[in-house]
Length: 156
Image 1 (cartoon, rainbow, N blue to C red):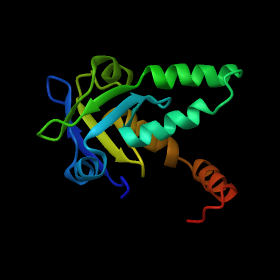
Image 2 (tube, rainbow, N blue to C red; image 1 turned 30 degrees about the vertical axis):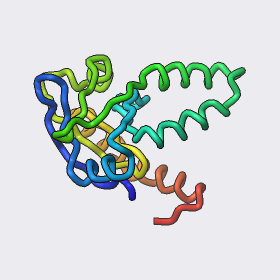
Image 3 (cartoon, rainbow, N blue to C red; image 1 turned 60 degrees about the vertical axis):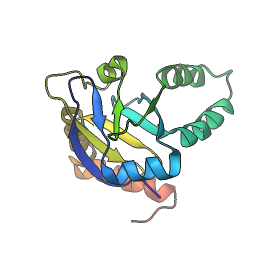
């Protein structure tokens, strides 16, 4: 099963986030409710089922560690990773450092939870709107995205 769709939820005062029922069902039944949440370059959080994260780590381990770009990315991405579990109410507790990175410690505690096939992205509402505007704000941006997809052999 894939994570697809977009939902908006609010963080509670303790930094817990309800995971939408559709996503929670996948996490509970296919992944034993175990998650890894980490910093993403775009200023959001990547939220992987633990089994998928393990695959990501294996791919990262295979990259040439002699390249400074690889070292820097691994340092950023892996050091930001925190194992989390869903509680009985289907919530995940996001540590303060991750909330801060993603701008989720602001006055507006609305979180956009975006399905990304094998992971979830957690965005502050404000940053999500900026990202969407950047992605679809001009015909040139859309043409660029379509060009990349075509290069990858994807037709939509």
